[in-house]
Image 1 (cartoon, rainbow, N blue to C red):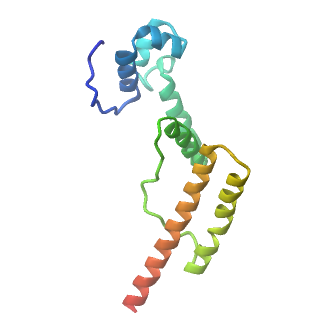
Image 2 (tube, rainbow, N blue to C red):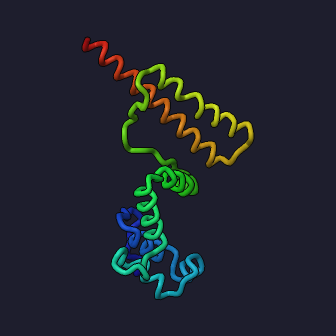
Image 3 (spheres, one colour):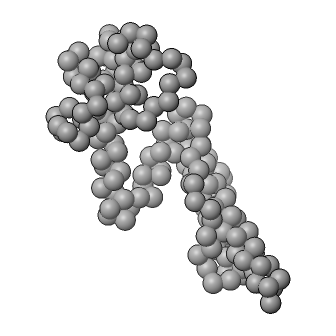
Length: 161
């Protein structure tokens, strides 16, 4: 598998990530990090996800858990894990969907900002972890985006009427 991937490889499957890691880090490092034998590392790098669960790599297991959490209505916990993972490589997680107001009008949307903002300020005052503070800031940003979306809807209604 050596030198199979360019530095610009786009990973679309978890097995491709493990193939890339194997290529870049080598088998001794993969064995050390994954705490598995060589044969299992090679299986992780094969596209066997969901075909034979004994060969599922750790990333596939996370995907499986996240799908199950989403089915249970707990998808928000997935977002929190992704934030932790993203932070470890200096990235932030941002939702793809545009903000949708969850209150009936602009004043209610504005009031909806207060608790998350207070939580953010309290976390900073209590010197909570940077990951926690960033996650709370993300909630505040989402609320502000909902404020703007609600205001945009109001402006559009006023212009039409």
